[in-house]
Image 1 (cartoon, rainbow, N blue to C red):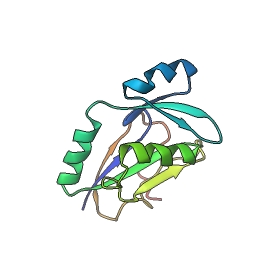
Image 2: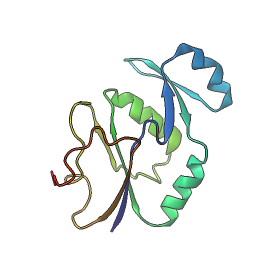
Image 3: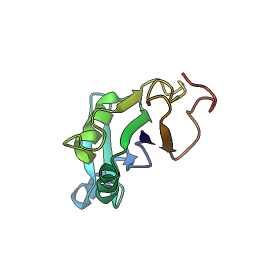
Image 4: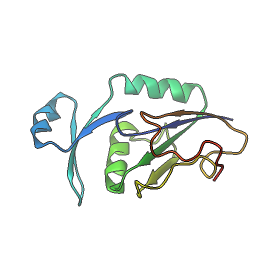
Length: 130
């Protein structure tokens, strides 16, 4: 199986907690309020087309992100994948931002995997399978 693993923040969306971003809400940004904070989220240009292409290639798409506010991630998924056609419940949120992301427990064994992230920080040892 072919697997694509995507990071959420700064790759699929731009996010800020700056209150001045409220003015962007009418221009494509969305306001998300959780019990922890208020965020302003802007999906990246072309995200819908990118998702359509991923779905059409019949690969398994996973979301794997570090985020202490899991309510935020759920709210963003309602914006970028409201019918769960892209991720199909294949979402892993690492709430402990100090914990390393690893693929061994996430993707099927022997899968061909492409990881797309904005940074290598947060990932475990590439040779680590767990």
